[in-house]
Structures are given as structure tokens and as C-alpha cells.
Image (cartoon, rainbow, N blue to C red; front, side, top):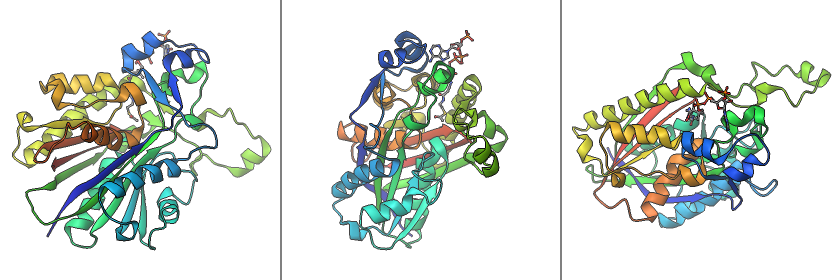
Length: 335
Ligand code: ACO
């Protein structure tokens, strides 16, 4: 029996900054509306042809691997969380195996949207705990901008999301007081259609229709979100899954040194912070700069918090996510 420990972190975002004012030039929106409701000031969008979900993930992974002080040949397994894969199939895990020149190790794709990174971490943790693998590369990467409806019709959703990637190397830890202490995963599929992209799922993709009537404006290709319903469920589930993790480890809210919530919406993070009476030093947010990058948001935020010296050895770090599915998850980590 071992524990797993995060030994390297990295993130990558495209250089291209898109401000709220930039969006207001292409759709009927404004900086005040976006900031008031979401806290977002700007986000990154890839320049067409310069990056993909996989390439961003690979760039983040290279940094994480270097910081873990291991060689790519030491990686035993890859887990890639995304809702925006380069291809419908195969998933991006195998593309990482190819592009990083890894041994022919296993590559697994996780499709749990905003909770994807915590789900991926949980899977990796189990493999390391049992002794099956020693070093696992876990990536969360998203390319939203090419799939959003960037007209006024899509403004309720498209202003929220941004592109980027984060990665972590998880390695075997023999000291059982350190590393990932526990993970907690949940789903409630009855709300699947409240936050969804329907096409090109096979339930929608009747190829004969596409050949007969190739309709690029088909709204089923765009994300749909019942925003207020998502908001209400998110604050409840975030709170529950954080408490579940703390209780499983006999910890109190006051023991949290750093909470990294999935960067869904700054108002959701602030609600959780107030509910648990956490100080500004105990919660990390960077949605202001990057928007909601779904599966990438936690590893990007975790990396930035660590780079800024806000996470130190011995700290209790809590990761918490909620998103489409609905799925929600937490991880309790002793750094
Ligand atoms: N700019 C200006 N006006 C807008 C915009 C925009 N970008 N988007 C919508 N509006 C308008 C609407 O058309 C509507 O106008 P109307 O009253 O004339 O009909 C008005 O603003 C209010 O629209 P609502 O959708 O009711 O706005 P709401 O206050 O609910 O805010 C928001 C929308 C920000 C999406 C909110 O519901 C929310 O934050 N929900 C949580 C969603 C979220 O965080 N999702 C991500 C988490 S899950 C995940 O990460 C996958």
C-alpha cells in the first residue's frame, strides 16, 4: 500500500487574450454584465491552427515532467481529462503518448467535464496506491473557443469559457501521512441535459441527414446551459463534497490551507468561501484571467497557486469540482 503525491505541476494557456470589451465588438454583451455575473475579465482563445487540446496538454505536461525531475520514459500511464478532444475518436491520451514519445504505456481518456481532472486524479491515485504504477501523467486540457456560438445568440455561454491546459505528475509516496488522502466522486445523470453539447454524439449524428442537409448552424453543436439551475446545484454540491472529504479525514474547515475550487464562476467560489468562512488566503481563484477552462481549470489554478508560493509542504489542500453530468468531486491532499 502506497500513497500518491503530486511531484510536478505545469500549465499552458495560449498567448491570445480576449477581453470582455473584445467580445462586446462581436456580440451584444458588455464588460459590466460579464464581470458582475461571473467575475471574468478576460480569457485566452487559441489562434486558429496554432494549438489543439492535445498540443496544449503536451506543453503543460512537459513543464510538469521537468518539475517532477523524471524522464518521459519514467511515465507508466497517461490520463487525459477533456470535454473538447481533438477527434471524436481516438481520444487525446494516445496523442500524448505519441507526441511526448512515451513508451507504449496505457492511455486513458476521462469524459467528466469540469470534474474531469479530479476524477482523473482519483483514478491515478488508485493505480499508484495498489503499486501497479509508479508515475502517472494526469492532464486536463480544453479548447472551447472553436466550438462556441460567438454571436449574441450564444452569449449566455460563450463569454464564460476559455482555452488552456494543466498537468500533474503523480508519483509513488511511501509516507502514508503525505499525498492524496482521499477522493470523493459523484454523479446525477438526471440533469445531463441541463449543461450539454449534444452533437456529434451518436444519439444525434444521423449521417444521412448531414449529407442531405449539412447545417453548420445546427444548435445541437453548441453548448447549452441552464445557467441558474447549474448555479444552484453547483453551490450545494461543492459544499457537500468538500465537507465529505474533510469528514473522511477527521479534518475541520479551519484545517484547510488552500481550497482550489473548479473555476466555474467567481460568484460560486465566493459563495463557498463565505459559507465556510474562509479567508482570501485559503481560497485561490484565477477565473478573472482565464475564464472557465472546465477540466483544465483546477490544474491551472493549482499550478499558479503553487508557483506563487501559496502552497507549502505540509499544507492541507482541497480540490473541489462540479460540472456537466452533473458530476462533482473532491480530493483532500497533504502537500
Ligand atoms: N451579456 C449581456 N447580457 C446577457 C449575456 C451576456 N453575455 N448573457 C445573457 N444575457 C442576458 C439574457 O439574455 C437575459 O436577458 P433578458 O432578461 O432580457 O432575457 C439576462 O441577461 C439575464 O440572463 P440569465 O441567463 O438569466 O442571467 P443569469 O443572471 O442567470 O446569469 C450566468 C447567467 C452568468 C450564466 C449564471 O446563470 C451563472 O453563472 N450560472 C452558473 C453557470 C456556471 O457557472 N457554469 C459553469 C459551471 S459548470 C461548468 O463549469 C461546466
